[in-house]
Image (tube, rainbow over all chains, first blue to last red):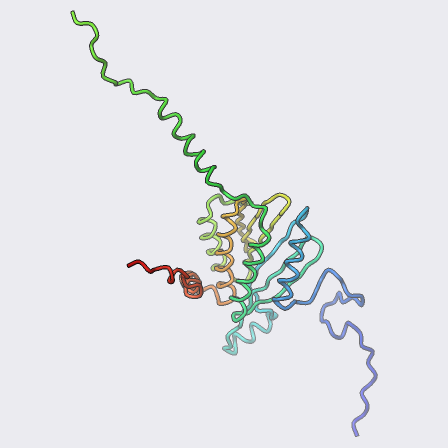
Length: 157
Length: 103
């Protein structure tokens, strides 16, 4: 007969390995989101920051493993699978996701769509600017009269 | 902070930074809609390159750079850039085939 397991109080300290484990959930730090929900949140961030504020998006390559594990895998001859870690923040809220090789093309297309839809405040170069620049270049040219114009002799002695 | 004026130089040097240290290098983008400004930063905590713009055409160039970085990060720094840009072309075939009806 196996002895009953001693009653363990489920504390946050046992689940997380970090020393600074707090019992109350920190609202600004979230667990990694699924790429699709990350994109939804990112869209919401852009929409919230229209009047003021910034949106930061950071990409970094990560294997999401600790260095000890990486060294072990390297010595065992296993190849380490890397993912692209994507973080976004609007200065207050932080969201994060990881994109693997298989998801990255789909994520990249959706991410590009989100950016295109929201980066509307950037200036568009109109053709008028190009024409104006061309005119500015041309203006001084016709002003210059050729001094070597052949003058017909007026007076004949 | 080193601001690069030429886009191509920024792309080339940032890929170099990433390839030399793929585990620490990161690519950051900051967008301010109220100012209409976009700032890109690539750093490996030793060197830092930045690119600032307010032009919509640079947003398009940035998308290509995003694709490059995605490919480098997900697949690995040994990936050739031509492979990434070549893949884009194969995925998005020119839709103009139907127009070619010249006799």
